[in-house]
Image (cartoon, rainbow over all chains, first blue to last red; front, side, top):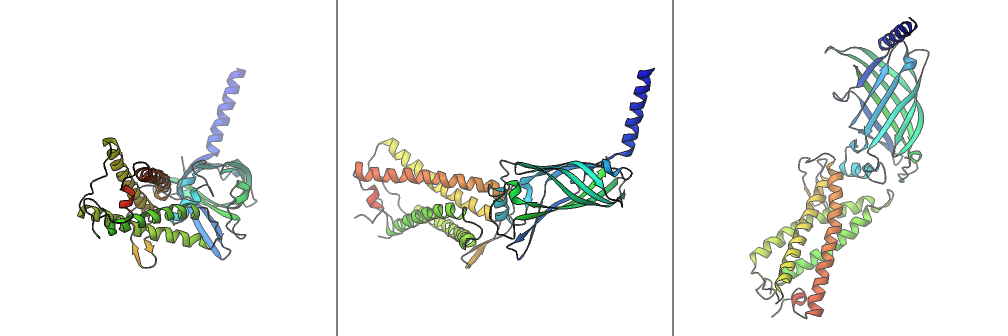
Amino acid sequence: MKNFLQAALVAAALTSASANAADYVIDTEGAHAFVQFKIKHLGYSWLVGRFNTFEGGFSYNADKPEDSTINVTIQTASIDSNHAERDKHLRGEDFLDVDEFPEATFASTGFTPDEDGLSGTLEGTLTLHGVTKTITFPVKKIGEGDDPWGGYRAGFEGQTTLKLADYGITYNLGPASTEVQLDLLIEGIRK
Amino acid sequence: MLKNSQHSYGWITITMHWLQATTILFMFGLGLYMVDLTYYDPWYRGSLQLHKSIGILLMVLWIIMIVWKNLNPRLKPEPAPKHELLAAKAMHWALYLTILSLLITGYLISTADGRSIAVFDLFEVPALPKLIENQESVIGDIHEILAFTLMGFVGLHFLAALKHHFINKDRTLRRLIKPQV
């Protein structure tokens, strides 16, 4: 009897968990997710680029946003700054060294929702250029709901700034260009 | 004196040989030098422009050389054992093909994004459609390997020339300095 009760409780807990937490796959197939970067050029203007190939998923429930999690894996060789010679340099040993470090990953370790329930602070471990660091940055929900094709989607944006030297990238681009801003624009389709 | 004969290279072949030899050595040095320049070096951009411009001109020279070689009588080699003649022929083809591959791969790096190559602001060579994913990086690695391979071949070619001159004491090297009578 005791075992049966335990089993029933576990089953109930699992059911409610799966009812509360919704798992999403990041819509890279339809390219509704973007990993962009932005860095100062000489201190006079911005240079913008992106990573074309990445994948991942997240878990989010509007009722329990504190349980949200996200995982993203980026193929570093897919860097695209719209200039072949520059991309070749960026993939090389001066920067990403993609032969040695083909992937960059982010795995969340916690999420602290703000009062409004639409934004919050994401904490997680970022591995880039072989260096793993814990970072925290603000994220914001853009929206969620049914899509016109029978699915259900949710989208978020986040922004963080990394010191390149923290990740062992020390090529001198000038004093104005030691930090890179990452813009993460993520849309997921509920599984 | 301009054209080759069965016994002698003409001035045109001699000039093209040494022009290519010096330009290729210069390009190897320039290539090694430019990839290590820092971003704020005044030559950071210019060195690459120069490397690309010379590369296209070398391609033109390579084509003229092959055409000229086939328009002229073939030289009779200096007497040598059969395996040496075969080795010489193989080395010449290795040089021709490695140089051509270097020129093509260089072109494919800089044109991977559809940009054309400007040759000293004189004219532009348009790009081909992209052939493979991450073309500039993949072809870039091949370009680098080919460059070192070519330098290996050039070294052997150079040693063989010295051997002909100092050990065999034949005319092989002298034929390439000036036309023989």
